[in-house]
Image 1: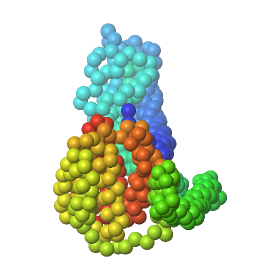
Image 2: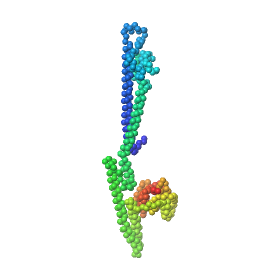
Image 3: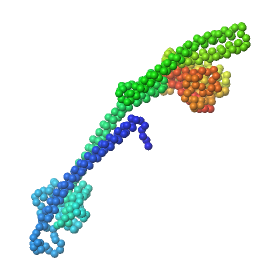
Image 4: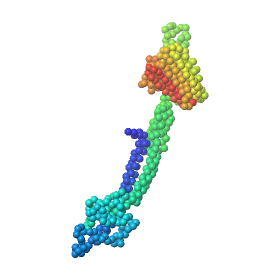
Amino acid sequence: MFFPRSIRWRLQLWYGALLVAALGGFGFTAFHLEKARQFRRIDAGLQERLSALVVALRTGTRQSPAAERRERPPGPAPLTTLRLTPEQTAMFGEGTGYYFAVWMREKDPIRRSENAPAELPRPADQKSAVRMRGALRESFLFAAPVDCVLVGRSIAAEQADLRTLAAALAGVGGAVLAAGLIGGGWLVTRAIRPIDEISTTAAKVAAGVLAQRINTTETDSELGRLASVLNSTFARLDAAFAQQAHFTADAAHELRTPVAVLLTHTQNGLASECANEEHREAFEASQRAGQRMRRLIDSLLELARFEAGQEPLRRDTCDLAKIAGDNVVLVRPLADARGIQIHAELSPAPCHGDPERLAQVLTNLLSNAIEYNQTGGAIRIVTERANGTAKLTVSNSGPGIPAADLPRVFERFHRADRARTAGHSGLGLAITQAIVQAHGGSIEARSEPGVQTTFTVALPA
């Protein structure tokens, strides 16, 4: 069964259900109270005329016993003349809508008013009752000196009034429901608007935009207080990341001098004529370690500058296809050394950015595609423009990235295959992602273990 998961729609549905129940109950009660009032009035008029008719019948049968014996022929006693007073006659006059009929025990009435319906069945044998026949309501009574007396009238006008009342109640109820839903929707939207702002801001903070803050216009409400607490948390988180970036940048900057001194001394040691073979091997090992440390320091410093927004970027018009073509030429010797084929499908993909930094992105991706490929494998690089976006795709036929490591490939110092990362800092993809994001783009990785790994870069065109 479908049920919306949005809090807004849940509140709106619950509010609407309560409003429908309340309006429905009110309309149902109002309609049936009016209907009962109408029928009480109609039944009172029928009973009044029924009583008057019975009185008239009984008055018309009063005779002395001697006269009754002289005048009555053999057989059942006949119905005497029905004498109605002017007031009683007016009760059944033209325009009143009331009619009557009188039965003995025969099927057909022995006396009926001129406006009585042509088909008027005799009621069942009951002492007193009211019946409905279509738009006719009739009250009858079994009483002496006759078998049954019936008085009725048409209630078509009252039924039409009730239908009009039902339509009016439905219309008013619908209007109130619509107004209530609109007003309730506005109130619900206003009430939970801070939740949308909180979730949007939290998503941006999670994506790395730590300077985002929640707009706290209503600090007295529960959500306002929650937004204030979250803003304080975001501020501390921003400060912690800024402090970390500053520490990384400062540490990297301070380490550059001693590393440069170390490399200078190792070079002097290697150039010295007094160094024997054992000393030379020690100097070469120190030099390799110093160079690796220098690359690591430079990468950390570069990454810290990107995260702090201190790395200047040019905004020139460039083409990813041309940058990719130049980088393919640059890395082809490395690919040939391992028998790896590079297949390039370079369609024009213009964008705005720093050509040198975008070339660094291409170099990192192609170097990884070669490093983590199988001997005699293949690399496919594609550039295209689609939906206002310049796209670059680099795929290799390597062993792939395990599913557990795929979400962490852009983390600094993360290495999925530690056996093949000797001499690598583990910062290449982190720097690549920082460069792409600094250009307002995105990068994602997909991998099918044993088939291929694909990196896709999307930049605003």
